[in-house]
Length: 232
Image (cartoon, rainbow, N blue to C red; front, side, top):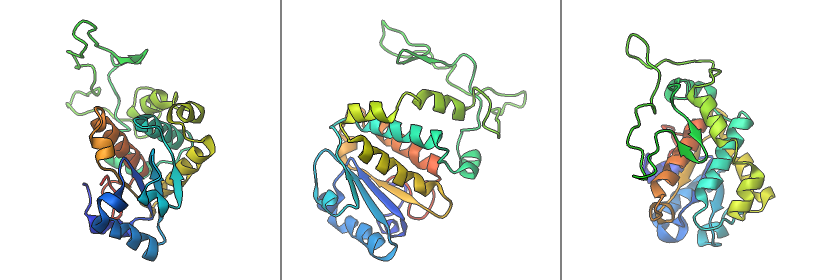
């Protein structure tokens, strides 16, 4: 957890995905109810089942088991394409302005340097930033350089359209967009969301990637390191 259980009371929005906190962590879920009661927080639950958490949610979105990365990928695309990111935060506290080496590439579902025989990436030296003579990474504060992380991120996630994500996740498209729109509101300074997950993410073979995608969402929104924010 990046934050403490009791810090959840400071959230403006709570999204439970990959867990069922009301049933699995009832003492911790107390702080979600505190946020709703005293901070006018809203609760989103994304889950294949209509759980006890979902029964008290302001917005519930069904999802096919194991499709969380597609759901989060669509959310990242929505935030980038609708400019719902916290620019001052990402410029100063993330690597979005950093310029990536020209050799780096992604095509047909694979990054450059893939060894088909070994089914691995033995050489990842090109997966790094351009550095100047001083040894420091080169950055573009305007985020306009075609190889800065921001532009590469936009390009990578552009395929995660609402139509494609709805077909993969089985979530009704209108519900999908409503969740993304609600989450995007926390990109505004002074608005904070926390994401709560549990074994519904960690027990997947790609659980680490699910959690990393959630962290990317929170960084784009400026919700990491904030009271009531984080990945918990």
